[in-house]
Each structure stands twice: as C-alpha cells, then as structure tokens.
Length: 360
Image (cartoon, rainbow, N blue to C red; front, side, top):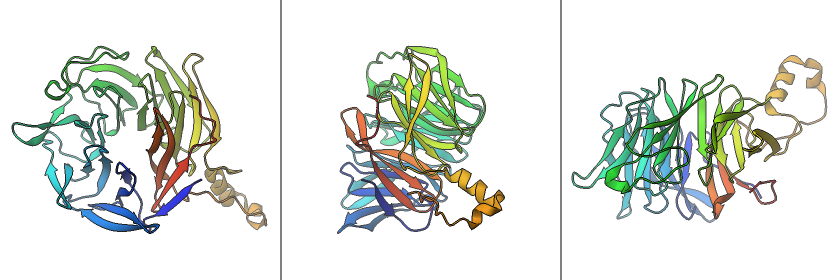
C-alpha cells in the first residue's frame, strides 16, 4: 500500500525520518528545517531549526544518537541535538568551505558525517572531544567541480562522492581518533584519511546521486544523461551502464544487493536489477504503474494537437512533479521493504516493496 503525505505546496528539497518514523524533518526550500510529528493521522508542525541564513540543501537524521545534521547554501553545516525538549545547534568548523554545502550524510555508526560542497570540497566531520566541537578533515585530492552527492560504505570507513565533472570517486574516510583500526575492504586498502581508492568516469552528464549496496560490494550512480551506472568491487575495472529512454534521474538507492531503484524527472520510481557477473542492468518494473511516461505525455500534448481532443483520460501518477530524493523507510535485515520519496509539490510518498520483483 502506498501512503501519500502532503507538507504544503513548497518543494521538499530533502527529508529525513527519526528512528521510529513518528517524526519527519523536511527542507521546503527555505533557510530552516521543519520537524513534523504524526498526531491523529495528521502531521503537526512541532519544531523549526532556523539558524541557517540561506536555503537548506540537505539534511540527515541519525536514528540511534537522534542527531540531525543540516547543510545549506550559506556555506555552513549544523549538528542539532535534542535536549530538554529543545533542538540545540552546534556549527561545524568548515574552514575551507566558501560556497554552498550541497550534500551531507551520517556514517553508519553515526560517529562521523561527510559533506560535499560547490567549491569542490569533500569533508569528513567528527566530534573533537577535547575541544568539544565538530571538526572537518578535508580531502586533499578533491574533485574538479561541485560535489553533488555523498554515500557511505557499510564499513564506516569509505565514502563515495559524485560531482559535476562527470566522475565518481571512492575515498578513505578513516579517522584514527574515532575509528580505531582500519578495516578490510574489497575496494582497496584503507589507511590515511582522504586516500583516493577509485575514480570512475561517466560518459557525460553531472552525477546526481550515488549509492552502495547493503553489503558494500556494489556501487551505482545516476547522471543527467539518463544513464544508470554500476560497478562491483570484484571487478572494479568493468563499469556496467544502462542507457534508458526515460527523463534524467536525480536519485538512486539499493534495496537489496542486486536490486536498485531510481527516480527523478520521470515522476515514478523505477526498479532495476544489476548482475555483476553478466555485466547487465535490467529494467524490472515501475513502482507507480502507468501506460505512458510523463515526459512522453507532455511532448504529445505539445506537438500532437489531435491528441488533445481525445476523450481517453491519461493515467495519473502518485507524484505530479520531479522526485527530489529517495531515502530508506523500513528494512528487513539488510534489504529494504519500504522507501520514501519526495517531490517538488510538497509530497512525501511511502512505497511498500512487498510483492515487487526484488532480487536478493
């Protein structure tokens, strides 16, 4: 069953859930983060995090520590902690960042988070216990353009960053002060913070989103040219790509080790299977079944005048605008059973994946 929730008419730029999914934090394209709680079947606005001076571009909510991190076009990131029924903020020391912070993600262990900015910086942020502030270790071999997306490897010591120079890079995110000993990874040897382990080049198009699979053995990303890319740690020299006929994708997420979901300008999330042995990415189905894609419908209405006079109604999709983000909602062991997506018309949709053709 699909659940549709509305938060007004403003675009949902980013959203994040608390641990038990009773609260949601949303960025509606303004300089604050609004927190809503479900009460009697309706969402009630209970808190506003309002220290940013410009539009909030990314948020993430750590379920166990109950901390929220927010990133903004005002060059800053804040960590918010809930104490005595008040959200208290602490600014992150991003000394080398002088432009918008575009993306932010908590690490799996919630003791670090990573940021990416439009001045090409990638930072690994952690809490400095002696000085009592959030410090940022900036990666030296940084991308050559705006960093648009970040994702963590399950081992808590690797990150992948996508940027507008058509490249995806895997870096060591090891911080000795919080991580202890480096862990073993099939993607390469983890030693110093910021070591570049892999660099993958797309055919063309800005990288919009990146994702590791639940076990971290597979990596996938989407770019503005409507292509899906995937690579396996078992054979990192072979990049598999699927050239689609859909409008560009803005987000991607693995729901199992071999199945991923993409979404964006097409208005409906799409399911694909990745087979690293065969080197294929195969379309499975749409989450929101429609007979004709939204993009093709728009083109037909514009150029095919006789079609405007037909009496056959067009299928109505759940989302009526571009999907801005997909995040996990509920998992069963390592696989996701529910996801949520947000759009430009103020909607957040929860999708139940039960009964879908999900490859384990």
